[in-house]
Image (cartoon, rainbow, N blue to C red):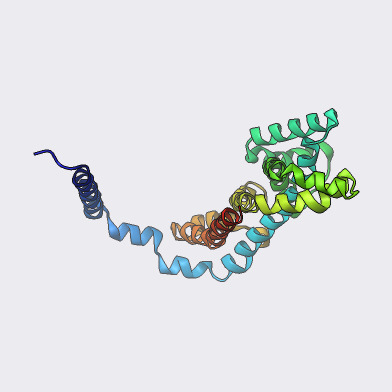
Amino acid sequence: MAMSRRRRARVIRGVQYAVLVAAVAVLALLTDWGEIRRAFFDAEAAKNQFPDIITVALVNTVVYTVLGFAFGLGLGLVLALMRLSSVPPYRWLAVAYIEFFRGIPALLVFITLGFGVPLAFQVSLTIYVTVTLALGLVGAAYIAETIRAGIQAVPKGQTEAARSLGMSHGRAMVSIVIPQAFRIVLPPLTNELILLTKDSSLIYLLGLSLDQYELAKFGRTALNQERSLTPILIAGLLYLVITLPLGHLVRRLEARTARAR
């Protein structure tokens, strides 16, 4: 007798659960839990990371991210307006910038600003300037496209209504369109903040003093000192302390935007 569609779906789901449980059981039996505990959960190695991993590495990671995002947001807004400009050279410049910085790895930008620019121009950039420029230049390319999409999503009737009240195009853009666009693009902008938080780990390539370490550099140095993966685990958990609340905020903002629409 042929099974009904509902019963067949229930059987398939049961088989999937059984396979999953069997895979977990086999993995648990084959895993050397003593080695896992020694490598990832070394209490002494974990104790040695505090409080510096909080007061130095975590704080620096947040500071570097905020600086890069602030610069990228300002530059991204300018690029978005240039991208929408009726003046062709402005559009060409904006498109060239966006395509260039979206097409190259952020790693190359860090290397260029950290080593190439000081050598080529005989200038000395502080670590904060280097990180702000590197994160901001890359982030601005993505933020610009996000803001451009937000501006284009604002109904044209808003601009027409503002112009009918005697506002200039620039005044209507600043007072009416851009505030509405930012409400629309707030969730993807928060996502960009999460990406910049992770990209800040690329600073480990640069020569840093201990008080300039961020989480990735701190964890890597501690790994060599402790001969244990515990510092890397702690650094990863602290990244989650930053990114998980931001991810929750993104979901809240997306839900609010959906309700508003």
